[in-house]
Amino acid sequence: MKAIIPTIDGQIISSFIIVKNNQVYKSKLMNKETAKTEFNNALNNNREAYYVGQSDTYKDILCVEAGNFESNTEVRLEIYTFGELSRWIENNELLTKFILPFNLFPRYGSSYIND
Image (cartoon, rainbow, N blue to C red; front, side, top):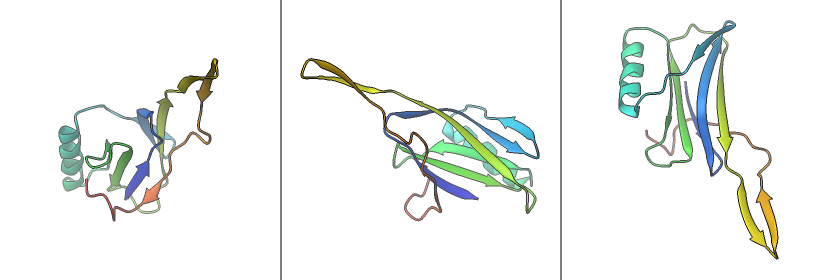
């Protein structure tokens, strides 16, 4: 499974977890090359594997990949984010901007990104 997930400008991914059969698997932070190598090695050894990484092409795009789990298995990916509020002064008033809804926008497939 592959998914492309655009994020809102200024949004930062702090962590992600996988929930499968009521069991929680926490993410492990590592550099992109090591993570991608471990992901591919797991797939080649018929082990379950999950990968979430930033696109090389677009910095506001997450690339999500998962593989080798049994068919008809329900897997939930939870991505935790935080963002910085935009603040500025206009007419001697301090204004703060917060974009609602504050979430990720999933798109499936990889037709325009090849990371």
